Length: 241
Image (cartoon, rainbow, N blue to C red; front, side, top):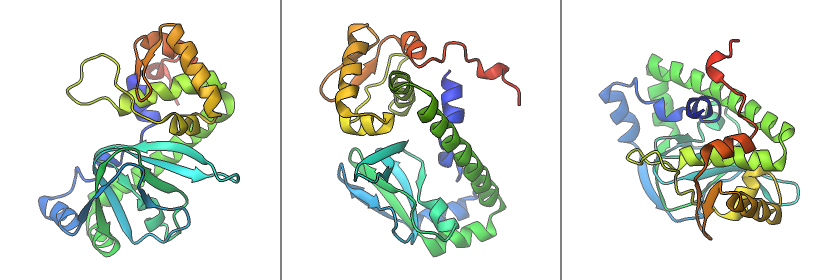
């Protein structure tokens, strides 16, 4: 199940720089400027003009669309090692979404000219970006399908599984992660009202599926959450195209 979530609901931009030579990596990162963003700071806004890309050195960033009523639809959470804003820059388009930190973060801005110069001269980076863009399209199709076909309860359980992986540190044991996300952001990610989210979280707690405080959520019964997400019959290793 972990591999299924990672393959189908996670961008792979943290792997983009793996094939670069030390000189190419230095050309990219050496030209960058790292800024410390406070929790809640906007990195770029929907409709803005891209002038470079952003590399998340630490912290977490939400990507979201603004709704017609002025709310947010959070559709992805970027973590350490991932890139932001490259798709708009490559398409020479305005930002189609917004990005803001959910916790203090260190983010490196790499200017457009430096990024494009390395891209033109690096077959490895070009191929990696093509794969990342194709995977990103599949990811958003999966997310739209998830939003359209699952109940709110199923979507909440499903998003808790994704967030459990997102908040898990490399040295953490098999125990559930401490998911630190505001109830408003989680409701916007699930696509429901905050009041409905709070009620469902309480039901999950009473059922022994999660532990929670005002600021954290921890899955304590992973099989139970998988069942609530209606994923019990899914075996991605046996699926063939």
